[in-house]
Image 1 (cartoon, rainbow, N blue to C red):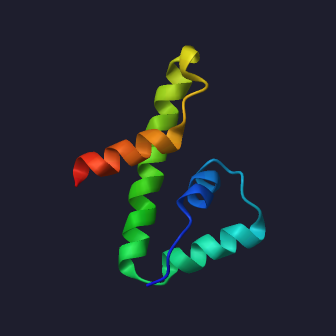
Image 2: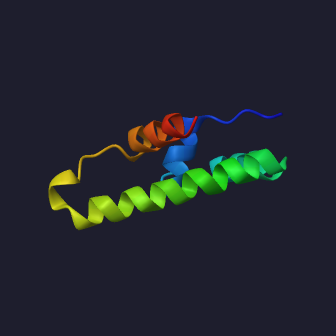
Amino acid sequence: MKKIDYILLSRHFHGETNETENQQIFSWRDSNSINRRTYERLFKLCLEERKVVVNQDDLEEIDCWGTILSKILAES
């Protein structure tokens, strides 16, 4: 199973990756069903976090990835 750099994945969800990095992520995502589900779950969590940040101006500096990791650990 291919590994993914979760910092890279977080940057991807924030639109901060280039085409080469996106291809690396898509290759990882498409390599098996577990990676696809992981990608989809993390993407959904990131979108939910962005909604919170958009709705609360004082949270502009919040780190989306930290919140995502906290949610993943809570599910374990």
